[in-house]
Image (tube, rainbow over all chains, first blue to last red; front, side, top):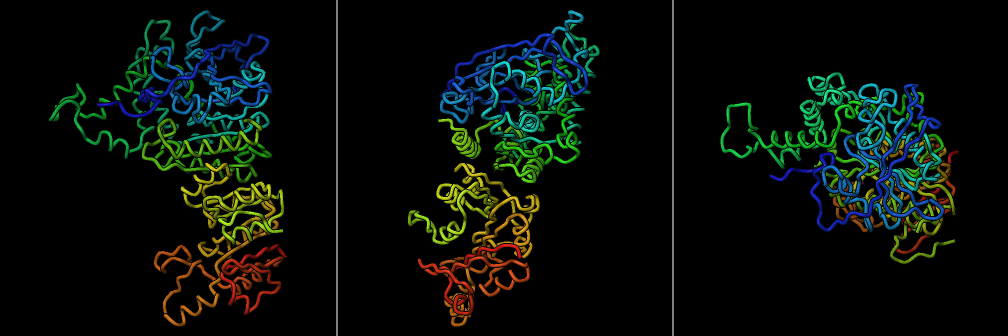
Length: 396
Length: 206
């Protein structure tokens, strides 16, 4: 059967008509003179950011779009993934003539710190020991990720982003950007996201982390020194998380109780009886090929720590006081991971802060992953918002 | 000054737009697909925001480049800070709210001026229909049968005047509409209540 949806999965079926825009795969390292001050109080140095760019920066550097990626994605937003060869995770959104038009905008997508695609993270070498950081990598937050991205913009000479956009954890970064650097974000599109991680969100992440740490191949986080990888634990973490990205309706529609390559139950625990089991196992297995277990621990931790109101006196509106940024918040009806109610909390706070905000809830049965998928109404609203913001920004 | 617009634009929207000063900040509650906000943006250079209940309406607005949030006039006005708009407009919506008095109260808190337009249930045709047929009136401005109308709180011009009094709202300007005609009433009384198909009030806090 066809593996279903979702570039969370990295398996979004490529549209043969979609051409990948030309990508520049870049890396920048900030030396000891520019340490990254972390929320934990530690300094991270050196700091490396791997990032991809598409399109051309205009003369007054006013057409930059920052795409913030979700938990398990990376900087390869519109080009084929160098490891897996699969098309970019938001190729349908990013490219010439598409919603994020690479003929008009200079698109930047950095790998978050803590990630495993070239930015500073637990797989990179700790200069103090000459070995991979492992759990010696400092615990990072969403704000730390964004602070590192701000250093990247400084490096690129970009003062103000035309737009910061992202779904899920990408949306958290967008909110953090708009809150921490309001004057640097002209427009912001947080999608399918939350201003704080709920107990349920944390609970699912904790299941994933425990699965990884229970794998004997994890070796207390030093598996790279042991020449092993906790693939079983990481695959289970992925399976549990993947369920939260889909809606029950979508699961019913695609799998129901259909059996996998058989007509009767096996009365056994070996091969999968049900298609949904086979699907989840496949998701788990392919995930471990491109993702690092410790990165998964660090990034889920960062998401769990995210509570934008808490660092603003418990009032979310204070995070956006006096903001001039234009916001477009997008949620999806069947997203139970970051449901409409979470997104509406953001909208209410923005309204209370007197911000310029649009909010749309897209009717879909595709669950949390809908933001990555073919949703024509989402495309129309984003196109309308971006076109109007571009007019305001004086971009032609 | 009357707006120079194409004749396709609804006459009540033009009447409302005429009350709004150029370059002001406007919140349109129940903004539908954004016709009024677009008119205000394009002809009055207004910084406009909208609230709309229907998803289709909101999506249409945002696709048009308008700043609109999905929300409910009865529930979602509480978030807006005091005096955050020059005008808060309720165009052809008050009769569909659950609690018109509370909505009006929120509007006068949020806006320095309040604009309300509604179909006048005191219009002579409506009175006559009810008198002669003994059935709930169905007219051009109130086109739905009683069982599927969203209009659960219809009122007449006189009823509305009473509510303004109760809510301590002063009337700055009143426009009456019938067919393609519109006129100003300085002190709308029984005659206006008979003649007007629709009424537009510009109000402020007493």
